[in-house]
Every structure is written in C-alpha cells, then in structure tokens.
Amino acid sequence: MRQRSASLGAVVFLCVLAACGNNATTGVDVSTEGTVVTTTVPASTTVPWSEGAEVVAWKQFVQSFEVLDVSEVSTGECGSRAMLITEESLTMYWWDGVRWNDDSALLQGGKGNLPQKVYTHDYTNDGVLDFFVIYADEDRPRTQTFGAFFAYLWGIDDVCDWGWVDINDGRNTTKTLQSPDVDVQKGKIFAPGFTQRRTSARGEYEFMPSTGALMYRELAKK
Image (cartoon, rainbow, N blue to C red; front, side, top):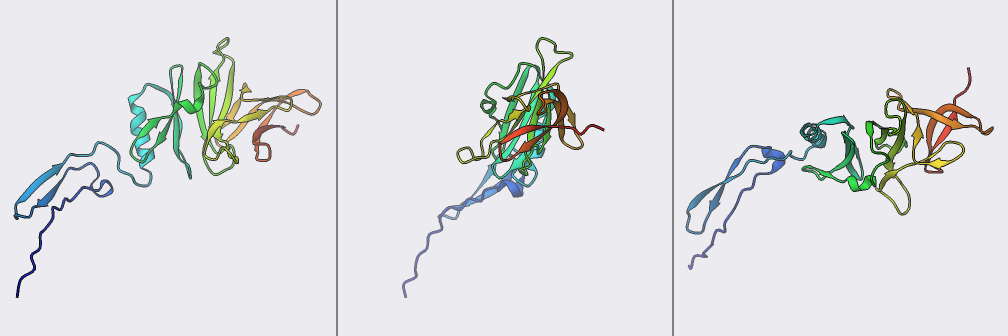
C-alpha cells in the first residue's frame, strides 16, 4: 500500500500580550526538513489590555509631564478619555487599548489660556464621568476664575461626540460659569445665576436632559 505523504508547515507560536505581559518569550519554528529554529519575540514596552489597564497606563503616562492637575479616567461605551493640565495648556487623550493618544482637537482650543484645575464627575447623569475645567481670568488671575463642562453631547447626530456643554444661568445660554465653587464630595457646582425676578444670586447648576444644558437653580433661603 502506498503511504500518504504529509508535509508539516511552519508553525510560529506568538506571545499573547494578556498572557505574556512584558516578558520576552521564545517560539519554535518546525520546518519540513525537521530543523528546529528558535526565535525570540522582543519584550513588549506597552501595557497589556486587561480590565483597568487604561488607568494603570494613565498613571504612568502623566509622569512624563510637569502637570498642574490630572483628571481621572472616564470610561464608557464609547471608550476611555482623560485630561491633563500643564502650564497654560489643557490636553485630552483617548485610550486605544494599548496606549494613550493625544486628541486635544476635540477641545477646540479650550475656553481660556490659563487652565488651573480639572474635576471628574458624572455631571450629566449618563453614567459616564465628565470633566469640569477651572480657568483663571487673564485680567485677574489670582482672584477671578471661571469654569466649563466637557462631556458627551448625546443626540441624534452626535452620539459619542464630546463637547463643551451649554450652561443656562437663568438669563443667557453660554459655555462658562463665573466664579464657580466645587463640592468634590457631592459633585455639585455652585455659581451666580439669575432668578425669575432677574436678580443675581448664588445657586446650584444641574443638568437637564430635556434641554441638554446645565441649568441654574437658586438655593432655598434659610
């Protein structure tokens, strides 16, 4: 009986990032002549994808900058984002599963030249962390500040699009709040606004899904 001949193709074993991490590994290549060739895969210099890898990578990434402030990582169904502030610069980044990439074009230049602080909280109540950026006023940088919200602009035509959120102070719709106060524990923002009587008072700003804006609500007087 004629024996059926078989040829053994080359088999290369690759290091899977999730299993190998940053360690180098050795693969084996078996040729048709039976020669065994050992090949070495270089050690990975990236952070392997796993749950929480973007947070670990972000903490490492920001160490290469002289930062004034750094946001937490915002992760949702549209991916992961984060912000950092350096001297006179606000930048935004997105996580591709391996590394953080600059995506500051989304900020459209920002809302000022002197960013000071960034707060991370779900201000729009959509389950995804948003960003509230505090700027110093160029005319009075030591005493006057203003802030702006950066979040998902959920809508028919802008799903997964980030942008500066509208703010209604009871009289005008704008993109910034003057002299804001931030309650970090409760995630609340307080700033001046206007009542129906058009008199200015300090109150809380809350997101209204029906308008897609943060609306002024006067605090009840004690």
